[in-house]
Length: 174
Picture 1 (cartoon, rainbow, N blue to C red):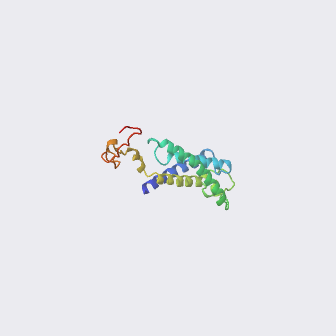
Picture 2 (cartoon, helix red, strand yellow):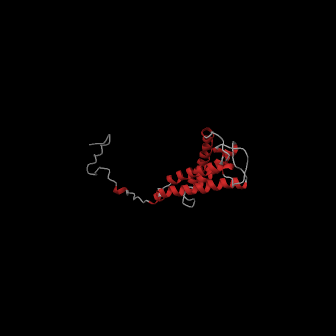
Picture 3 (cartoon, rainbow, N blue to C red):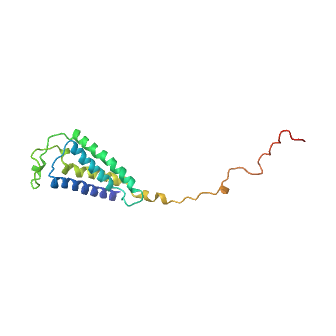
């Protein structure tokens, strides 16, 4: 279980951190809000849901990955909305804290609006939960073989000798 947790944390850090750093460095976006926040965290949830868990090359895994991805969209948007309600304290000037990074905007933003912080945290949490849920033991469930009994082997508790006699037909002559 600890191994699965560590794998989930690594996948989440790589996915969330990579998306956040790419957004920050390539698109020069330091904070997101409104529609763009929902879009970012929804896409991050979908990608995390598809990549984390059972590998896609296993039989039937693409259905599970698709469901995890769709659920990840809902989880990402829900966590962004929750952050907008809960994390509305004072705004943080993130570029002033890490002076070596190129400045993207001079306006401070709330914690939930900063993908460099929230992206890896969200992806790590979601990927860890998926990896903990997928313990790898259910992969061989279809390989069990059960012997089906033949019809002659079934005992219904009735012997032929004890069977009741047939009633006489009506109108038969004696």
